[in-house]
Image 1: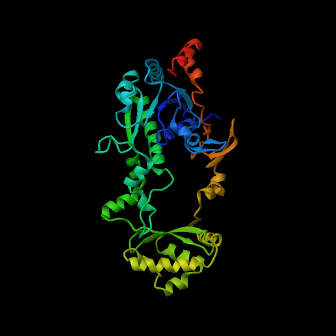
Image 2: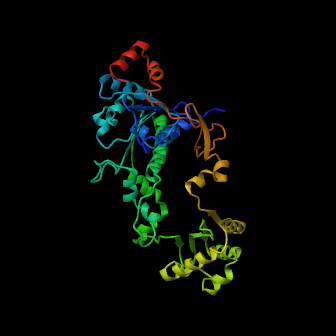
Length: 402
Protein backbone atom coordinates (compact mmCIF):
# COMPACT_ATOMS: atom_id res chain seq x y z
CA UNK A 1 0.00 0.00 0.00
CA UNK A 2 1.08 3.57 -0.64
CA UNK A 3 2.44 5.56 2.30
CA UNK A 4 -0.02 8.28 3.15
CA UNK A 5 -2.62 10.25 1.18
CA UNK A 6 -0.44 13.38 0.97
CA UNK A 7 2.22 11.94 -1.31
CA UNK A 8 3.27 14.60 -3.81
CA UNK A 9 2.49 17.50 -1.46
CA UNK A 10 5.57 19.67 -0.86
CA UNK A 11 5.93 21.70 2.33
CA UNK A 12 8.57 24.19 3.46
CA UNK A 13 8.53 25.26 7.11
CA UNK A 14 10.45 28.07 8.81
CA UNK A 15 8.88 27.14 12.13
CA UNK A 16 10.02 26.27 15.63
CA UNK A 17 8.47 25.10 18.89
CA UNK A 18 5.28 23.02 18.87
CA UNK A 19 2.34 24.79 17.24
CA UNK A 20 4.56 25.70 14.30
CA UNK A 21 6.01 22.24 13.69
CA UNK A 22 3.29 19.69 14.50
CA UNK A 23 1.07 20.59 11.49
CA UNK A 24 3.86 19.63 9.13
CA UNK A 25 4.94 16.60 11.16
CA UNK A 26 1.38 15.32 10.73
CA UNK A 27 1.65 15.95 7.00
CA UNK A 28 4.93 14.02 6.93
CA UNK A 29 3.19 11.12 8.70
CA UNK A 30 0.74 11.14 5.79
CA UNK A 31 3.39 11.10 3.10
CA UNK A 32 4.06 14.79 2.37
CA UNK A 33 7.61 15.89 1.55
CA UNK A 34 8.35 18.36 4.38
CA UNK A 35 11.52 20.45 4.48
CA UNK A 36 12.27 22.13 7.79
CA UNK A 37 14.52 25.18 7.55
CA UNK A 38 16.91 25.64 10.50
CA UNK A 39 19.74 28.02 11.34
CA UNK A 40 23.15 26.53 10.51
CA UNK A 41 24.47 26.96 14.05
CA UNK A 42 22.33 25.22 16.62
CA UNK A 43 19.18 24.80 14.57
CA UNK A 44 15.74 24.80 16.15
CA UNK A 45 16.23 25.65 19.86
CA UNK A 46 13.80 22.88 20.77
CA UNK A 47 16.49 20.36 19.85
CA UNK A 48 17.88 21.19 23.29
CA UNK A 49 14.59 20.97 25.21
CA UNK A 50 13.71 18.03 27.49
CA UNK A 51 16.77 16.02 26.55
CA UNK A 52 16.72 12.72 28.43
CA UNK A 53 20.10 11.12 29.17
CA UNK A 54 21.08 8.95 26.23
CA UNK A 55 17.75 9.53 24.52
CA UNK A 56 17.77 12.96 22.89
CA UNK A 57 14.97 15.54 23.02
CA UNK A 58 11.46 14.21 23.52
CA UNK A 59 10.16 17.63 22.46
CA UNK A 60 12.02 17.75 19.15
CA UNK A 61 11.48 14.09 18.29
CA UNK A 62 7.73 14.27 18.91
CA UNK A 63 7.18 17.44 16.90
CA UNK A 64 9.54 16.95 13.96
CA UNK A 65 9.49 13.30 13.05
CA UNK A 66 9.51 12.41 9.38
CA UNK A 67 10.64 15.84 8.13
CA UNK A 68 13.86 16.80 6.34
CA UNK A 69 16.30 19.26 7.91
CA UNK A 70 17.98 21.86 5.71
CA UNK A 71 20.13 24.58 7.24
CA UNK A 72 19.99 28.06 5.72
CA UNK A 73 21.40 31.36 6.88
CA UNK A 74 18.52 33.61 5.89
CA UNK A 75 20.61 36.72 6.56
CA UNK A 76 22.87 35.63 3.71
CA UNK A 77 21.62 36.46 0.18
CA UNK A 78 22.54 32.99 -1.09
CA UNK A 79 20.74 31.32 1.81
CA UNK A 80 17.67 33.40 1.13
CA UNK A 81 17.88 32.56 -2.58
CA UNK A 82 17.81 28.85 -1.76
CA UNK A 83 14.71 29.35 0.38
CA UNK A 84 13.01 31.11 -2.51
CA UNK A 85 13.87 28.25 -4.86
CA UNK A 86 12.34 25.79 -2.43
CA UNK A 87 9.23 27.95 -2.08
CA UNK A 88 8.84 28.11 -5.86
CA UNK A 89 8.31 24.33 -5.85
CA UNK A 90 6.24 24.15 -2.65
CA UNK A 91 2.53 23.76 -2.07
CA UNK A 92 2.53 24.93 1.56
CA UNK A 93 4.77 27.25 3.56
CA UNK A 94 4.60 27.67 7.33
CA UNK A 95 6.07 30.09 9.86
CA UNK A 96 5.29 30.98 13.48
CA UNK A 97 7.37 34.08 14.17
CA UNK A 98 5.83 37.08 15.87
CA UNK A 99 4.12 39.48 13.41
CA UNK A 100 6.62 41.35 11.25
CA UNK A 101 9.61 39.02 11.77
CA UNK A 102 8.99 36.98 8.61
CA UNK A 103 8.98 40.11 6.47
CA UNK A 104 12.33 41.19 7.93
CA UNK A 105 13.88 37.82 7.14
CA UNK A 106 12.76 37.39 3.55
CA UNK A 107 9.83 35.03 3.93
CA UNK A 108 6.82 37.29 4.36
CA UNK A 109 3.58 36.54 2.55
CA UNK A 110 3.83 39.32 -0.05
CA UNK A 111 7.36 38.34 -1.00
CA UNK A 112 6.69 34.61 -1.28
CA UNK A 113 3.39 34.95 -3.17
CA UNK A 114 5.27 36.78 -5.93
CA UNK A 115 7.53 33.75 -6.23
CA UNK A 116 4.68 31.23 -6.11
CA UNK A 117 1.12 32.55 -6.64
CA UNK A 118 -0.33 29.09 -5.81
CA UNK A 119 1.36 28.99 -2.41
CA UNK A 120 -0.62 28.26 0.76
CA UNK A 121 1.04 30.39 3.45
CA UNK A 122 0.34 29.49 7.09
CA UNK A 123 1.20 32.10 9.74
CA UNK A 124 0.84 31.33 13.45
CA UNK A 125 1.10 33.98 16.17
CA UNK A 126 0.43 34.15 19.88
CA UNK A 127 -2.38 36.67 20.25
CA UNK A 128 -3.50 37.19 16.65
CA UNK A 129 -2.44 40.02 14.35
CA UNK A 130 -5.06 42.68 15.14
CA UNK A 131 -5.32 43.11 18.89
CA UNK A 132 -3.44 45.36 21.30
CA UNK A 133 -0.88 42.65 22.08
CA UNK A 134 -0.27 41.38 18.55
CA UNK A 135 3.37 42.44 18.74
CA UNK A 136 4.11 40.31 21.80
CA UNK A 137 5.58 36.80 21.71
CA UNK A 138 3.13 34.06 22.62
CA UNK A 139 3.37 30.69 24.31
CA UNK A 140 1.07 27.83 25.22
CA UNK A 141 0.82 29.00 28.84
CA UNK A 142 -0.14 32.49 27.73
CA UNK A 143 -2.97 31.14 25.58
CA UNK A 144 -4.18 28.81 28.33
CA UNK A 145 -4.21 31.74 30.75
CA UNK A 146 -6.11 34.14 28.48
CA UNK A 147 -8.36 31.62 26.73
CA UNK A 148 -10.21 30.33 29.79
CA UNK A 149 -9.26 26.66 29.82
CA UNK A 150 -7.73 26.88 33.29
CA UNK A 151 -11.27 27.17 34.62
CA UNK A 152 -12.22 23.86 33.01
CA UNK A 153 -10.04 21.93 35.45
CA UNK A 154 -10.28 24.23 38.44
CA UNK A 155 -11.68 23.44 41.87
CA UNK A 156 -13.91 25.87 43.78
CA UNK A 157 -11.92 27.77 46.36
CA UNK A 158 -8.58 27.08 44.69
CA UNK A 159 -6.66 29.36 42.34
CA UNK A 160 -6.79 28.56 38.64
CA UNK A 161 -3.60 27.25 37.05
CA UNK A 162 -2.48 26.38 33.56
CA UNK A 163 -1.85 22.72 32.81
CA UNK A 164 1.27 20.78 31.88
CA UNK A 165 -0.04 19.47 28.52
CA UNK A 166 0.37 21.96 25.67
CA UNK A 167 -3.29 22.08 24.67
CA UNK A 168 -3.08 25.51 23.03
CA UNK A 169 -0.10 24.50 20.91
CA UNK A 170 -1.69 21.23 19.86
CA UNK A 171 -5.07 22.83 19.13
CA UNK A 172 -3.37 25.40 16.93
CA UNK A 173 -1.44 22.68 15.15
CA UNK A 174 -4.58 20.68 14.36
CA UNK A 175 -6.36 23.77 13.03
CA UNK A 176 -3.33 24.76 10.98
CA UNK A 177 -3.17 21.25 9.53
CA UNK A 178 -6.81 21.34 8.46
CA UNK A 179 -6.73 24.93 7.30
CA UNK A 180 -3.65 24.37 5.16
CA UNK A 181 -5.18 21.37 3.43
CA UNK A 182 -8.46 23.25 2.85
CA UNK A 183 -6.52 26.11 1.26
CA UNK A 184 -4.47 23.63 -0.77
CA UNK A 185 -7.69 22.20 -2.20
CA UNK A 186 -8.73 25.72 -3.18
CA UNK A 187 -5.32 26.46 -4.71
CA UNK A 188 -5.38 23.31 -6.79
CA UNK A 189 -8.93 24.04 -7.92
CA UNK A 190 -8.44 27.71 -8.78
CA UNK A 191 -4.69 28.21 -9.08
CA UNK A 192 -4.82 30.88 -6.37
CA UNK A 193 -2.92 30.57 -3.11
CA UNK A 194 -3.67 32.43 0.08
CA UNK A 195 -2.45 33.35 3.54
CA UNK A 196 -3.96 31.67 6.60
CA UNK A 197 -3.53 33.33 9.99
CA UNK A 198 -4.04 31.45 13.25
CA UNK A 199 -3.18 32.24 16.84
CA UNK A 200 -2.61 30.22 19.98
CA UNK A 201 -5.28 32.26 21.74
CA UNK A 202 -7.89 31.85 19.02
CA UNK A 203 -7.31 28.12 18.77
CA UNK A 204 -7.67 27.67 22.51
CA UNK A 205 -10.99 29.55 22.49
CA UNK A 206 -12.21 27.18 19.76
CA UNK A 207 -11.14 24.19 21.86
CA UNK A 208 -13.56 25.21 24.62
CA UNK A 209 -16.45 24.46 22.24
CA UNK A 210 -20.05 24.53 23.38
CA UNK A 211 -19.11 25.15 27.02
CA UNK A 212 -17.78 28.53 25.96
CA UNK A 213 -21.03 29.25 24.11
CA UNK A 214 -23.11 28.35 27.16
CA UNK A 215 -20.96 30.64 29.30
CA UNK A 216 -21.49 33.54 26.92
CA UNK A 217 -25.22 33.02 26.57
CA UNK A 218 -25.74 32.70 30.33
CA UNK A 219 -23.27 35.51 31.01
CA UNK A 220 -21.83 33.68 33.99
CA UNK A 221 -19.02 31.25 34.63
CA UNK A 222 -19.71 27.50 34.54
CA UNK A 223 -19.89 25.26 37.58
CA UNK A 224 -16.50 23.68 38.17
CA UNK A 225 -15.18 20.96 40.41
CA UNK A 226 -15.54 17.19 40.34
CA UNK A 227 -18.71 17.29 38.23
CA UNK A 228 -19.74 18.78 34.93
CA UNK A 229 -23.41 19.73 35.25
CA UNK A 230 -25.33 20.18 32.00
CA UNK A 231 -28.85 20.40 30.65
CA UNK A 232 -32.00 21.65 32.36
CA UNK A 233 -33.89 20.66 35.54
CA UNK A 234 -36.25 18.64 33.32
CA UNK A 235 -33.44 16.85 31.48
CA UNK A 236 -30.26 17.13 33.51
CA UNK A 237 -26.88 15.72 32.64
CA UNK A 238 -23.87 15.02 34.79
CA UNK A 239 -20.31 13.92 34.24
CA UNK A 240 -18.68 13.28 37.59
CA UNK A 241 -15.50 11.86 39.04
CA UNK A 242 -15.16 9.81 42.22
CA UNK A 243 -12.46 7.87 44.06
CA UNK A 244 -12.80 4.23 44.97
CA UNK A 245 -11.80 2.77 48.35
CA UNK A 246 -8.14 2.77 47.29
CA UNK A 247 -8.21 6.38 46.07
CA UNK A 248 -8.27 5.41 42.40
CA UNK A 249 -10.46 7.79 40.36
CA UNK A 250 -13.15 6.98 37.81
CA UNK A 251 -15.69 8.95 35.81
CA UNK A 252 -19.17 8.34 34.49
CA UNK A 253 -21.40 10.49 32.29
CA UNK A 254 -25.20 10.53 32.29
CA UNK A 255 -27.84 12.22 30.17
CA UNK A 256 -31.44 12.24 31.32
CA UNK A 257 -33.46 10.53 34.08
CA UNK A 258 -33.34 6.99 32.64
CA UNK A 259 -29.56 7.06 32.54
CA UNK A 260 -29.51 8.16 36.17
CA UNK A 261 -31.71 5.34 37.40
CA UNK A 262 -29.85 2.72 35.36
CA UNK A 263 -26.47 3.88 36.68
CA UNK A 264 -27.52 3.99 40.32
CA UNK A 265 -29.27 0.63 40.07
CA UNK A 266 -26.24 -1.00 38.46
CA UNK A 267 -24.04 0.17 41.32
CA UNK A 268 -26.58 -0.79 43.99
CA UNK A 269 -27.09 2.82 45.05
CA UNK A 270 -30.69 3.37 43.96
CA UNK A 271 -32.40 2.97 47.34
CA UNK A 272 -29.84 5.18 49.05
CA UNK A 273 -30.11 8.05 46.56
CA UNK A 274 -33.92 7.88 46.61
CA UNK A 275 -33.94 7.99 50.41
CA UNK A 276 -31.78 11.11 50.22
CA UNK A 277 -34.30 12.77 47.90
CA UNK A 278 -32.49 12.24 44.61
CA UNK A 279 -34.85 9.99 42.68
CA UNK A 280 -34.29 12.63 40.02
CA UNK A 281 -31.30 14.96 39.92
CA UNK A 282 -32.89 18.01 38.30
CA UNK A 283 -32.55 19.94 41.55
CA UNK A 284 -28.76 19.98 41.30
CA UNK A 285 -28.86 22.15 38.16
CA UNK A 286 -29.62 25.37 40.00
CA UNK A 287 -28.90 24.51 43.64
CA UNK A 288 -25.34 24.52 44.90
CA UNK A 289 -26.49 22.98 48.17
CA UNK A 290 -28.26 20.06 46.48
CA UNK A 291 -25.27 19.54 44.22
CA UNK A 292 -22.93 19.33 47.21
CA UNK A 293 -25.27 16.92 49.02
CA UNK A 294 -25.50 14.54 46.08
CA UNK A 295 -21.79 14.56 45.30
CA UNK A 296 -20.96 13.99 48.96
CA UNK A 297 -23.30 11.00 49.07
CA UNK A 298 -21.81 9.53 45.91
CA UNK A 299 -18.30 10.11 47.28
CA UNK A 300 -19.19 7.90 50.24
CA UNK A 301 -20.88 5.23 48.14
CA UNK A 302 -18.10 4.86 45.57
CA UNK A 303 -15.55 4.68 48.40
CA UNK A 304 -17.04 1.31 49.40
CA UNK A 305 -15.73 -0.62 46.37
CA UNK A 306 -13.05 -0.84 43.73
CA UNK A 307 -12.72 1.20 40.57
CA UNK A 308 -12.56 -1.81 38.29
CA UNK A 309 -15.76 -3.20 39.79
CA UNK A 310 -17.65 0.11 39.49
CA UNK A 311 -16.58 0.63 35.88
CA UNK A 312 -17.54 -2.93 34.98
CA UNK A 313 -21.00 -2.53 36.54
CA UNK A 314 -21.65 0.81 34.87
CA UNK A 315 -20.50 -0.36 31.46
CA UNK A 316 -22.66 -3.46 31.92
CA UNK A 317 -25.66 -1.12 32.20
CA UNK A 318 -24.56 0.70 29.02
CA UNK A 319 -23.43 3.73 31.01
CA UNK A 320 -20.40 5.65 29.79
CA UNK A 321 -17.70 5.07 32.38
CA UNK A 322 -13.92 4.81 32.52
CA UNK A 323 -11.00 4.82 34.90
CA UNK A 324 -9.24 8.18 35.04
CA UNK A 325 -5.74 7.42 33.77
CA UNK A 326 -2.50 9.14 34.53
CA UNK A 327 -0.45 9.89 31.40
CA UNK A 328 1.67 6.81 32.06
CA UNK A 329 -1.45 4.67 32.50
CA UNK A 330 -2.90 6.15 29.29
CA UNK A 331 0.24 5.17 27.37
CA UNK A 332 -0.40 1.54 28.38
CA UNK A 333 -4.21 1.53 28.13
CA UNK A 334 -5.42 -1.51 26.15
CA UNK A 335 -7.59 0.56 23.81
CA UNK A 336 -4.75 3.02 23.20
CA UNK A 337 -2.38 0.18 22.34
CA UNK A 338 -4.86 -1.86 20.27
CA UNK A 339 -5.76 1.12 18.07
CA UNK A 340 -2.18 2.20 17.48
CA UNK A 341 -2.50 5.53 19.27
CA UNK A 342 0.84 4.59 20.82
CA UNK A 343 3.31 2.61 18.74
CA UNK A 344 7.03 1.95 18.34
CA UNK A 345 9.65 3.15 15.88
CA UNK A 346 13.14 1.80 15.28
CA UNK A 347 15.53 4.68 15.87
CA UNK A 348 19.06 4.41 14.43
CA UNK A 349 20.59 5.90 17.59
CA UNK A 350 18.27 4.88 20.39
CA UNK A 351 16.79 1.57 19.26
CA UNK A 352 13.13 0.77 19.73
CA UNK A 353 11.25 3.84 20.99
CA UNK A 354 7.68 4.13 22.20
CA UNK A 355 6.03 7.08 20.40
CA UNK A 356 2.70 8.58 19.41
CA UNK A 357 0.92 6.64 16.72
CA UNK A 358 -1.27 8.55 14.30
CA UNK A 359 -4.91 9.44 15.01
CA UNK A 360 -6.08 8.27 11.57
CA UNK A 361 -6.56 4.86 9.98
CA UNK A 362 -6.57 5.12 6.19
CA UNK A 363 -7.65 1.93 4.46
CA UNK A 364 -5.63 2.50 1.30
CA UNK A 365 -2.86 4.96 2.20
CA UNK A 366 -1.84 4.34 5.81
CA UNK A 367 0.16 6.85 7.80
CA UNK A 368 3.74 6.03 8.72
CA UNK A 369 5.52 7.66 11.68
CA UNK A 370 9.11 8.64 10.99
CA UNK A 371 11.97 9.92 13.11
CA UNK A 372 13.28 13.45 13.60
CA UNK A 373 16.26 14.50 11.46
CA UNK A 374 19.77 15.45 12.47
CA UNK A 375 20.57 19.12 11.93
CA UNK A 376 21.22 19.69 8.23
CA UNK A 377 20.89 15.99 7.49
CA UNK A 378 19.25 16.62 4.12
CA UNK A 379 21.30 19.59 2.90
CA UNK A 380 23.18 17.73 0.18
CA UNK A 381 20.19 15.81 -1.19
CA UNK A 382 17.80 18.78 -1.23
CA UNK A 383 20.28 21.21 -2.74
CA UNK A 384 21.33 18.67 -5.36
CA UNK A 385 17.64 18.40 -6.24
CA UNK A 386 17.64 22.16 -6.86
CA UNK A 387 20.57 21.79 -9.27
CA UNK A 388 23.52 22.67 -7.04
CA UNK A 389 26.73 20.74 -7.69
CA UNK A 390 28.79 19.10 -4.95
CA UNK A 391 31.38 21.86 -5.30
CA UNK A 392 28.73 24.57 -5.01
CA UNK A 393 27.26 22.93 -1.91
CA UNK A 394 30.72 22.75 -0.35
CA UNK A 395 31.25 26.42 -1.10
CA UNK A 396 27.93 27.39 0.47
CA UNK A 397 28.84 25.41 3.56
CA UNK A 398 32.30 27.00 3.78
CA UNK A 399 30.92 30.55 3.68
CA UNK A 400 28.16 29.79 6.21
CA UNK A 401 25.19 30.15 3.88
CA UNK A 402 23.99 26.66 4.84
